[in-house]
Image (cartoon, rainbow, N blue to C red; front, side, top):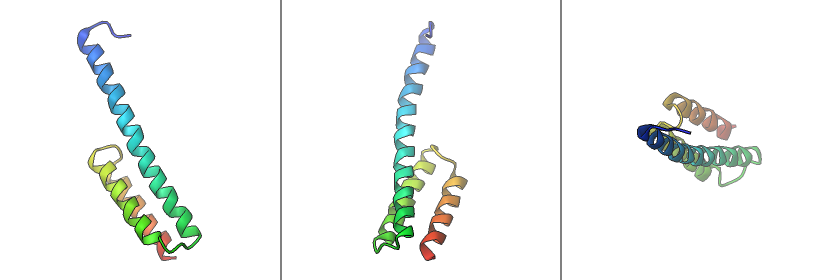
Length: 84
């Protein structure tokens, strides 16, 4: 455990940020997985799920939870999977 006051605060901040980042990653993962399942079953609500996945990916990239290029790559692959 940290002894110095600033190290204690840094630990608190990093724990708080980790919780936020984990929640954001979970939202992205759920949105992407839901879209993949819908695309596989050729569901009618795929365009709405695509929009939701785009939103989650953009927010995660904006908040630096994932890299912007990764978000772009995933969005591209998801769009391709919907077209098929």
